[in-house]
Amino acid sequence: MAANNDEPTELSKWDPALTERVMGWLRPLIKGYHRAEVRGLESFPAGGALVVANHSGGLFAMDVPVFATGFYEQFGYDRPVYTLSHDVLFTGPTGDFFRRTGFIRANHENADEALRSGGVVVVFPGGDYDVYRPTLSENVIDFDGRTGYVKAALNAGVPIVPAVAIGGQESQLYLSRGTGLAKLLRLDKLLRSKILPISVGFPFGLSAVLPINVPLPTKIVMQVLDPIDITAEFGEDPDIATVDTHVRRVMQEALDGLAKERRLPVIG
Image (cartoon, rainbow, N blue to C red):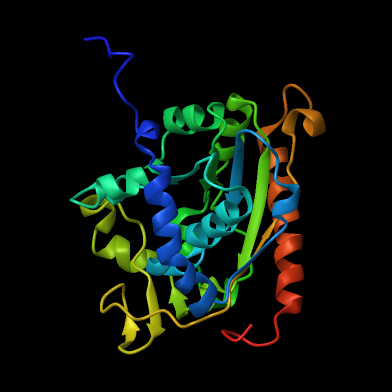
């Protein structure tokens, strides 16, 4: 049966009024508890843009709230910020809330529609592999070989805007992604998860996701970098791997710069 073209999409559910209220609720946490800073928004392009970022903080990753509060504070609520998210976020009674505040299922159709509509789309190519990286690798850009974001930007004809953040991975001491343990417990078959992260935090100490520790009040600084026009820099038929290497290189250089500024863990 053919789909009805008038059927509302996930994007149509974005509610700017609710989003503004939620940003108001989150701002004390973001600005107070995490003392967050977002730099570089003055160079953010108009129209659709794909924000490609590293992901930090485990179960309580603050990257989206940090970026969104900074973006909306700078530009207002005329242009939505969409976040490509895992299906599990939309299960249960909270699914509609997430849709109304800009979270959309991570698939090519949603990404393309959001970008072509002039929206800002945030993607974390490294996903949970990145967000649970060990503390010893906290300042390393690693997308686990995923390059689909380059194709998404090319298909929609929008620039890539790299963004890097530091501090989020100091919310706990992350020991391991637990890939071996996840495989042993067959979590890849049962929960479609290839990791079972192991960390140490407050107040329970050692945790393999459970028990849930409280994230430390670490200072988070996010740097939004200059937009990358893929076609202008790499031609009409660019090599995807070359573009990905370039994006990760400029992100790594920026993250290295933020790391040199940082005096102490958590304190910043």
